[in-house]
Length: 192
Image (cartoon, rainbow, N blue to C red; front, side):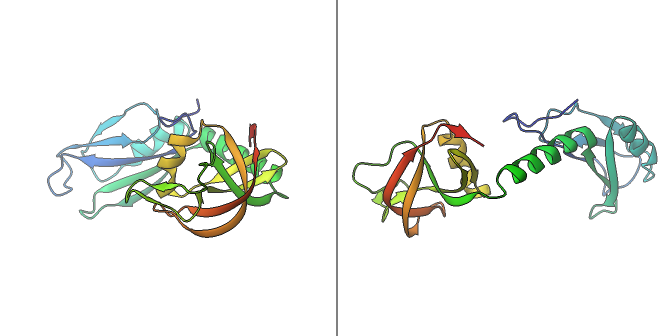
């Protein structure tokens, strides 16, 4: 079984924490598995700070676990699903191999504005050029680099037609993205 997040990406991490306890004391509340993936929900009564039985159960179900403690000294168990993590590692390794000789550049999803300027919708003002994402290219294949701030924007535009953008950085957009004065654009077809 490979666990995935709501966007369909493999997601191997989970945490088992206490809930409903009285200042982290055993005999109150319960332990619960929490994850952003579709891993099944699990609960255990919080009877003792000895959580070896939970670790044994999770290990038998394919999880590697590390025990820590929260601010009330209640056990917290960080878990990695082995099979899901193997898929993540294999995918990353294949991508790193494919893009080992990649050329750095810029990508835009959706046609460039005819004016040559993107609009900063927060301030309702034009940018100094066209908003783009940083990316790497091998021929017409690409992979986009986004930080957590830009990820929401990327998810919103990623299904639009993609263009490799050539030009000079002339600023930074309101979300921290590069803004480029475009000298050339090439329509792309394949995501890496």
